[in-house]
Image (cartoon, rainbow, N blue to C red; front, top):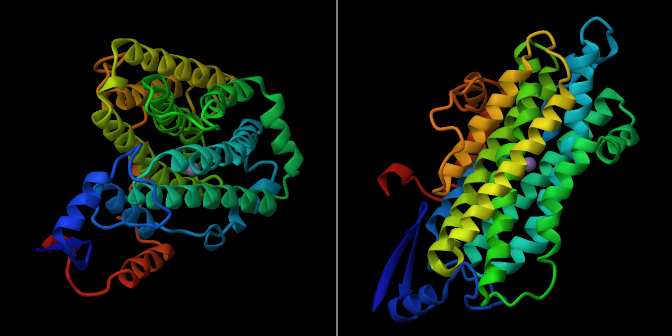
Length: 361
Ligand code: MN
Ligand code: FE
């Protein structure tokens, strides 16, 4: 018996009984251990679809002009002290944070999941963290910032140190041989996926994203702003990847989803929000021109609720209003005409082997 699989624009004919067996053996965790990369038959279609979306969004830091940013950085009147402080914080925080996320993907999550299509999309995720880290290096080099000063921020600013300890704590516990048949260990992994996807990338990245993009909206640091827009678009895919991973992990392992575990996640998000608010208050000590502290604090409450709801938990502040609606528009890059548009389209064309449209599948 043969069965035809349609994946993206490609068709594959598989022996059905073998394919069904392989399909059955695919699991988020505790599936068939194999050194070969058997993507087909796909069980987690969302993972492959997301991989294609992420690939189509590919960008390179050097394609973004930094000339205006450099002019503004050198001109004392172009950027205020608070503006400069926010930019330094943004570069300093994300330089290390992107590395922490990439490291956790490679050494924890990608190690522990067993289905190849999950490893595929996680590989792309890790690569995007490399692109983000590289974009920060490009910003540091272009502006002529002392890299050690950025590094020092990461070690000396207490609210940043606390944010980091919060996430790395859930990573360390998983860096050893784990018996993933035990509920407590499955919960450790599920919590790690929740912390990195929903608390860190999903919530704690957004205070600085918002501030940097507020500057960009005021025509300040356009190159940096553009890179952060691309980064933010990537992050929304990372959050979705980890949300899907979390949901399927729980779906396949119902023993994870106890009332105590749910309560633990809710409390963890509460801590994440508190740490982010402390950090924002530290980063934006007064209401600078065009930036209101309360808006950023409320935005964190708003975004944290979206993350909780995304995995089926109750929000902290039902009905809360989004105080920064323009931030969502900033992420919608596709509509915009810019020099990069051509290249993005080229990547998409190059990946199509034939003329079948995605819509026809
Ligand atoms: Mn990133
Ligand atoms: Fe990310």
